[in-house]
Image (cartoon, rainbow, N blue to C red; front, side, top):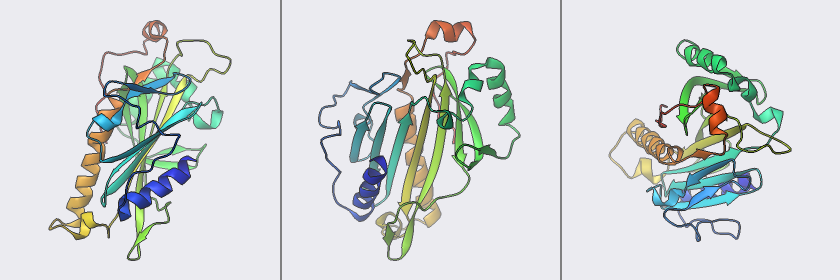
Length: 251
């Protein structure tokens, strides 16, 4: 469902048109101060449509996570997928980072390591970062190469996508039958070098690419800084896993 939605959404934004509307989205009911939460309550964020994040948006939720889609017409489309399922393949060694010593090792490792490999998904990341999300030390990665996963072309030019991933490990606030103790956030922006953002401007292609990346960074700052995790804060503090530091986008 999410893949079909973003394929349609990409087509609408890059080629012009209007936002997607269906009965599984939340955009018509969200208020300015309302939080969007996964159905299991493991993560919530503020409604992004009131954060100056593009003129187009849609929000999708299910029992295991949520998807948020937004974009700027003829320039870029963006997606954030949040997974909370208790499936080993989605965790990327997440349980390992419930140990403060391992987090410290990762914090040192990112200073010198040139790439990271996620064996579960067969992905190579060109850079790693340590991010503070709701006070939790989380691992963020940038995929090594641009992808061409969406079939849209403009005058023969393919659409490119840059992917990022963030993994957060924490102790849940309640003991459920299938505890996850983690979230995986996969987010991206897509663009086409023959879109009007590139052709109807005096800027160079690199300057437009810089504008796209900077806009995406600002959007992720706006969203991630509002994230709240459904964690056991006392246990996190006791184990040295909770910090009084805000989120600050680094990529």
